Image 1 (cartoon, rainbow, N blue to C red):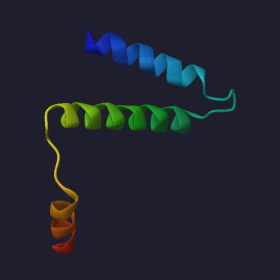
Image 2: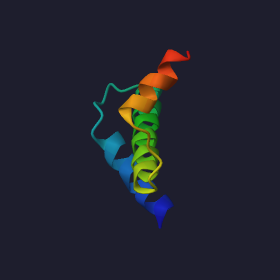
Image 3: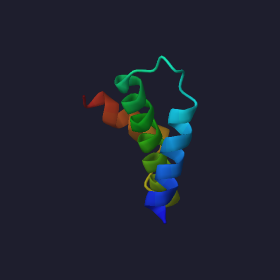
Length: 61
């Protein structure tokens, strides 16, 4: 189950933070883990663009 996997990953990540970690540190670590997970899922679904397409998109900014 995906939720259980994420819960385990979150607990593991929090466990490795220093004792002096703040709530912001915990939230940031979980945010980054979530973004990495979502990125990997997007790649697995083939939802990627080429470097050339990214450069073209960037030029329009």
